[in-house]
Length: 115
Length: 113
Image (cartoon, rainbow over all chains, first blue to last red; front, side, top):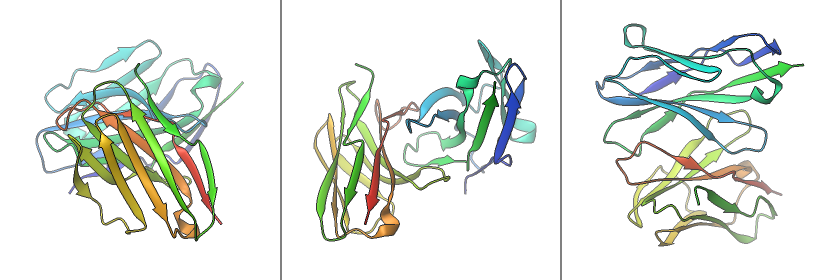
């Protein structure tokens, strides 16, 4: 069975602070994808990143960076120099490769960035 | 066009009403999905259509009835809903059943009174 745990329910930071959102996953499969989605108040789920289980390279995209570590089954997401527009709920998700139907979301972390 | 469009954005319906939610995409995606999201909860999968055929039904009550008239359209027909069905209903699509990337619509916020 697959499971995604986002232990941080809510995080509040002041603008320009760095913040890391934690994601821990469980799966018995060796081939899988991990995702991060952002859900602003408007409701739409915005795709941020996908990693596959074969590629542990960390990734940086502007102020966003992701740290994938299979040894600890974690896929953490860091926002550098946070901005008010980063305020949203962030979901980590897991999908087994070759099984498009089984996308499991974590409970989400609500990030509030205060000016 | 890189969007998934959902209409209406908001819907209030009585328990005896019949209504439909609509989802449309013109990206050539061949898999489409309905998710239900309750407040402060993650999205939960309801239905998957792949190549216009229903490929999974996650034990959703029969008062929810999906329909995929063509590869660009996905409907969710609602009948005799309960107040606990009030939620955000999200539609998503992906290029094909094996493809990893989902594009989500902004959802229909449904209130059952």
